[in-house]
Image (cartoon, rainbow over all chains, first blue to last red; front, side):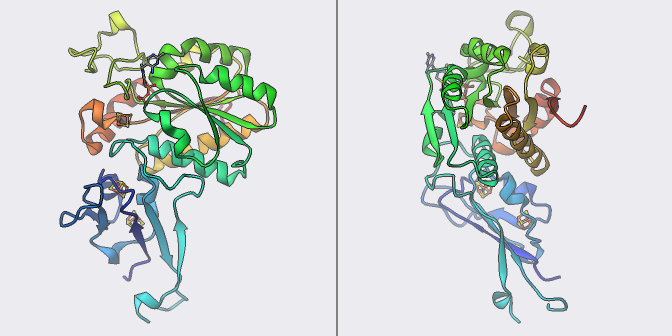
Length: 79
Length: 253
Ligand SMILES: Cc1ncc(C[n+]2csc(CCOP(=O)(O)OP(=O)(O)O)c2C)c(N)n1
Ligand code: SF4
Ligand code: SF4
Ligand code: SF4
């Protein structure tokens, strides 16, 4: 199934608490252990983008209001 | 059509009334969730211009830096007294305090009891993290029996220092507009907490007396637990002593 949505993490705010990672019901997110933010945290990012539904749970639980959630607006029948 | 060509719609973004600056809170501290929920409710109710916040002393002492609304800072524990004065002079404004458990339930217990017993028409957002966060994690009246803190290193002896302060028992005889307790971890709890905050502000605007929302919040740093473990401790241990729900003015009864 194609992704229904996607998220963006504003790395200025992300503090790598991992709450979004464990609360996402679809295993979309992980901390990016390859990168550090300007404040020295491994930021959350999408590792299974195709599984994202745009449900917004990650944004609701984020203590630092770092996440923006988008949904794709497909017409009926479009892949 | 490639994914990049599909039109998108934003379904969630950071509320405008939250300032753009990064908070000083520790990773996984849900003072930030409480701020965001208050910001969202004020925006949704169109009360941003009309709101006056009263900040307290504790980790949230800089809350006025994080909101683009009017804010004043009270001395430790005195926020309900300051809010009382503001609301009596400016009865059309939405006036709320934002207090920690050391602030409200310890040094400020006199002010909150007074405001509640007089039925002051203010809203109180009370963040309970079962310890004094800012000063290094000392025992508070909300600390759980057996909980280790810097001033109860062998665990809190409830026979000596009291059981956790539970407002719904202590204030059962007061007429209050609203009294509820929510939790700031897990999406379902957070959505419910937001509804409680909304209800408190609505009843506040309707002049129904003191409206009070307690929010259970992890303090990963002073609990000595990583954020995910602190979340579990809150849900498994803290809620045993602090049940979630509406106690006055809710739909439940
Ligand atoms: C009159 C006075 N006494 C003591 C202090 C020291 N002090 C600063 S914050 C604090 C407790 C804060 O704890 P809490 O209200 O639980 O907020 P948290 O930091 O946990 O969010 C204390 C005792 C002070 N600033 N002023
Ligand atoms: S929007 Fe939902 S599915 Fe997508 S990453 Fe966030 S929690 Fe996971
Ligand atoms: S919940 Fe927010 S701060 Fe925590 S890891 Fe996810 S994006 Fe970063
Ligand atoms: S010390 Fe505790 S209450 Fe204070 S910012 Fe850190 S986690 Fe939050």
